[in-house]
Image (cartoon, rainbow over all chains, first blue to last red; front, side):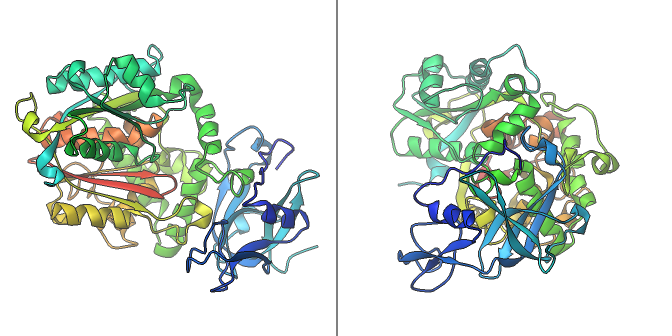
Length: 138
Length: 388
């Protein structure tokens, strides 16, 4: 992820996610009625339909649900980084999200691998959540 | 209201030259397909009073149906620009059928396609597609997935859960290439082997170059009219026996299970409406944007059990002459993929097979064809069951 990476443009629906990420926190929407988390953000809980939702911090722990090692970048901005690992992580709280795995060799990635959130500050306004192997940090 | 199978029929089909066609603009390709469909049906543009098309990526059209209808000189009683991504081809037929059955209009021209390869080059088409909505702009695009990466995530998980192999996926590419070689209007003209697929460059693991669809120039058209009118036209009418839609998610990151698609629902509804069973289907034109797509569709449409799609595609079972010939024109993998119009060629091939006009690739005595379109990342589905 370089200076040219297409960065997110937060909107009123997604702002809390990106504000939290910029503070190095992973926050997801949670239903006040059934207490389940969901992602991506919606107007109503996808589990019970309740519209009383609020943002809460999650553990940032989960496991690799699936992954792919990208060898041919979609655009010039990603070309210097190949090969890189795009993954879907299943968070312990339930929701999945797409992310990038960091600090791990592509050959070492496996489905089921325990991972934990990390953050990469892209510029003064944007920080992207990434994931690294759990229990394997600086 | 009478069922669609008794009120409407597909009476004309046509396609432009496909592959690399630098001598034609997008409108010329669509126009070539439209006039071929009219000639096929024995109709003229003055008979058309409805038009459906899809968005394109090669020109900045603000109202594609208006631009195309105006270019062709259609005076519309009904107009629509339809976008169900890769499921648009099947959906256009259903929407045309509804427009005719409701009495809104008499004869609908459905046309889609563009000069995607000439206008964009393969590399810029790949970038455009990656940045134009297949991935979530905020939660996915910043991580750099290709459209192919989204399908690679499905393939990887399918391999993990069910033991599906790269060689089984390669079998899909080889079989469909074999079909394209029997189609005189196909982009690819050389045979490939399983080993060549496995040896092709890794794009986004586990998908290799030949697991991925083409980028092509080309357009396809079909005409839907009233059943009572269809009887007097040139071709044997093809009826719409069943149809169904299915939707499981919008983006990969929010799909509850990547191995299970909305094709379960679209297929179930289409079979229920048609009142037929899987054993009755003579030929299946399945959307084949990537090899894994065909495997998931075979499972979710119910042609085999979940997890058995990899084994199902082996041993010639989905080839011409096999138990269930699949995508007999050569599909997106080997015949033509000009963006949203790509899945429309599958509909045309279904019609051709039911008329007995598929020449060297004709499935003997084909009476029932299933056509399936898939859009997004196995997200949105449209299934048609067509009858001779």
